[in-house]
Length: 358
Ligand code: PLP
Image (cartoon, rainbow, N blue to C red; front, side, top):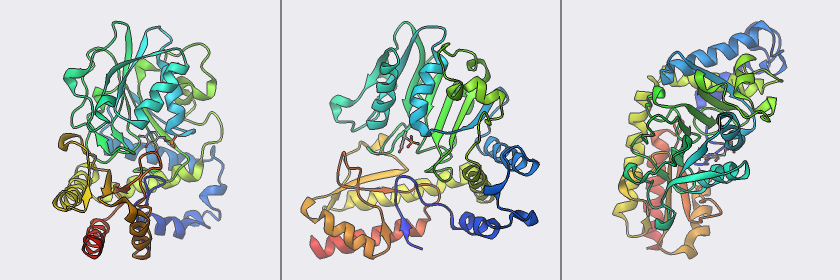
């Protein structure tokens, strides 16, 4: 298998794919595939419940929080958050750290308005907003931030403090990548297709007291309360994606859980940033304290070599290193399932390419 640096859908652990292959046609002697099972049947209910139990264990999710497995991607949560949290009035407050934060903000504006509590747009998003820069509006109903900017490669090295206001976090590209204190959050959401599993599922972790703040026009399918009351099965859920996410949770537990993988993630990122910083040929513009551990964007000094770099990388079995079309350059996404050997192979390749073309 090649090393897949795609930002999402991202590489999955080989062990998970192999187990899925083993169980694909006949799930544990039941004579059918998980894909073919009723989502209301005992077998799938158990698969779903086990996935939730394991996620709760991995993230130490305390009592008083619901875990929802919904559809529509993290992008649908950009609407769900203001719809579900602004029923009592007030304004959604947003930290602006890059492309994904801006998309969440745009949706909140579309649904009635939002306040930008801090932004690093003027700095070209070279870092995340600092705690001291955050100014909430007097009527703040929640503070939303994007833990890891998948495109810009910008992350927070602290947990924003929002006082009494619920903290809402888009953790799409960092969930399960490092330990977090869930009790500090009102809502955490994440599209699955980076650190959790295949595309098609979105995880929402919501504090119980926030289930009943929805605006009256909130569609049933977007309502946290409805999802919670129906075991995330208001309609047919993406059963196979849910099952695969469950396999990823089991894989992560077997690897020692979030603390263990966080250590590996730090090592991988440190190796790659060091290789970039030591070279004259490559660069990364993000300030040290805000560098993402999951997505490492970098540029070649000579952009005319970009296509050559990508073609040679692909020939060497290193896939999807092209940066997002909005920013150009390169990006290596090195989520939980990217083995350390993958990062070493990338560094070796970069080094060789720089020597050939530097
Ligand atoms: N938020 C972040 C940080 C992302 O990286 C992405 C996708 O890459 C999204 C939201 C949108 O996710 P989805 O495609 O699941 O809607």
